[in-house]
Length: 364
Image (cartoon, rainbow, N blue to C red; front, side, top):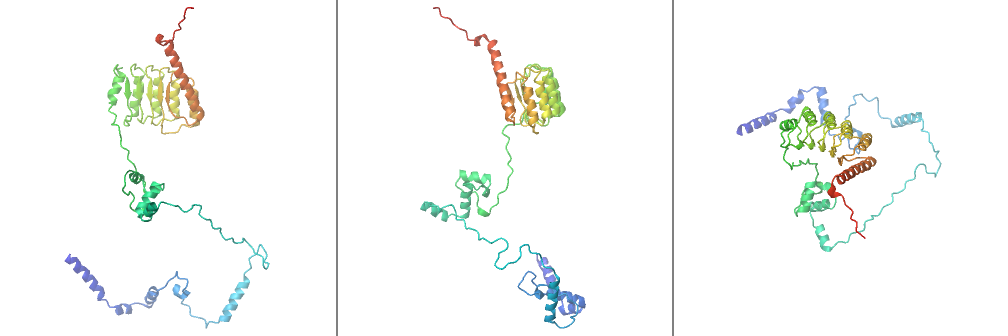
C-alpha cells in the first residue's frame, strides 16, 4: 500500500515541477492562437449574449475601413427590394381578420365531485406513506404498479409488497410451471415387442409426453397395431407426431378392428394428416373415441368443412376431442355424435333382452 502511495506522490510532484513559461515560449504562433481559442469561455446556447461571446472569432481578414452605418443600411435595403414579395391569397384590407380566429379553450370542470370519506379513513389516507398508497392503488385496479406476485401477496397478508412507491417499475417474469405428474415410465421398446407378439395382457398403450420417441418407431407401432387383437386404447399425446405418423395410423385404422380409443392431441399434425385419419373412419366401424385437438398448426375453415363432410359418413364414433372454430361445423358434428350415440343405444336395447320393456295385459 505504501509503494502505491509513493508512486502517486511522485506522479503528482512531476507535474508541480513543470515550468509553464518555458512551455509557452516553445509554442509557435499558430499553436498560441489555437490555445487562445480553446481557453475562451463561450456559451453558444445563451441567446442573450452577443454573437462575439457565443462563438469564436475566426475572421483573419483585415477590415477594409471604418464602419459606415448609413451605407450598411442602404445596402440592406437595396438587397431587400430585390427579393420578390410572396403572393397573398387573401388581399389585405384594414380591419379584416385573415386566417383562423383564435378561440380560448373552454375549461372543463371535473365531473367527479369531492369525496366525502369517513374522518378516520380520511385521516389514514392523509398519513399513509407512498408505499402504502401504491399498495392500495394496485389492489384497487392499477395493476401496473406491481407484478402478480406482489399483488397476490398483498391480498393474502398485511405486509406491504411494493415498498418502492410510485417510481417502481414492473418487469415481466417468466413463470416456470412445476410438473405435477411424474414422467411416463412406459418402456417404448418392450411395449412395441408386446404389441407385435399380440400379448393378451396388454390392452392399453400410453406413450403420452414421451418426446424422444423416433418417428420410425411410431410408424412401427402403427404397423404392428394392424395385426394386434388386444389393444383397445392407444395414446400418443405430446409425442411430436407429424403427418407421416398420421398417414401410418390411418392405414392401421383401415385394418384394425380392435382399437376403440385413439388419443393424438398436442402434436404436429396438419390438416392433411387429420383428414387422412378421418377418412379411414369411413371404413373403420370400431373406433368410438378420437382426440386430435391442440395441434401446432391451425386447420382453417376449408379443412373443418371437409372434416364435417367425412364425419357425416361415420356411424360408430361417440366422442370427438376437437374444438371447431366455425359454428356451422361445430353444431353439425355435435348432431352426428348424438346420432351415433343414439344408434349405439338402439343396438344395445335390441340385443339385450333384459332391457326390453314387455307389455302386460290384464284380463277383463
